[in-house]
Length: 153
Image 1 (spheres, rainbow, N blue to C red):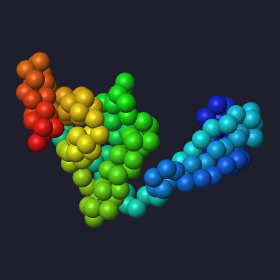
Image 2: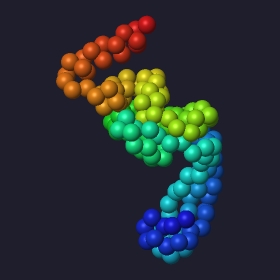
Image 3: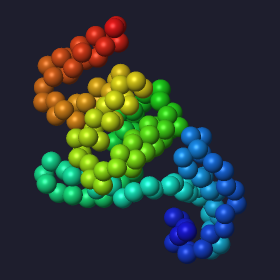
């Protein structure tokens, strides 16, 4: 594993343990070049999934992109990194076990919406504002009204 600090090619594993959700292995490493310590995660990948964008472009599914978009929606909310990781892992697992080798960005967005809906209403609305392309304040008001109705039911 290449060191993120100095780029040295070799590192030594100092500690390995399963992650909280059991879907990955957390490894604590030390660079043999500079002595810096860093953490890596090893995950099982069941199948290669391609994402079909609305523009017609196709690209490999990237967990990091999914994680980043969810983190943006959850910024400054009482949501832990572990909760985000569980949500991302769950979505990734659904995609890999669906039997499909290609999914649409819309399908992924729907899975994120479903996950955030149960996690945090503000993060849900934030993500929806990008996913559903809100253009004016009225769009937020109308969508927030449907979220409140769901919460009361």
